[in-house]
Length: 162
Image (cartoon, rainbow, N blue to C red; front, side, top):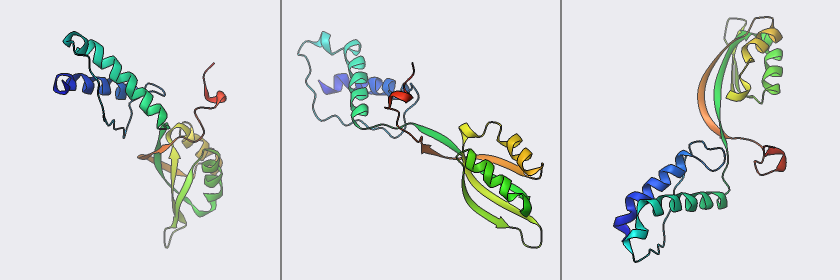
């Protein structure tokens, strides 16, 4: 019987992974292991209309018991500026959940290059804020770098919509 429902189980899992349990976003790094299956003897009860929604609900329940997390994209920001403007850059990055990775002074020049990780959500208005804090002396460049777990607990009452 398992070969009869294989395509339906795959379709149910794909449906569940495309519409994630937390915010209906695609899920990443999820695997579902099937250890035991009990099927009805009548073939009418083993059709796609019965198996696909059931597989989706089983996947959702399994994911909720595995303590899922929300992920956010993070930019690698490279900022070129004079050495005397670094204080304003550090202030802006700290206010926006940025983490400084390196601060390299270019030999023979008053310029330095600061590399930092900045969550994409915090990057809106970043360039204008940076320019206002440094008097227009800082020049940022943002490139996607990685995903990280969103800080905070999504299960707290404050995180739930009203």
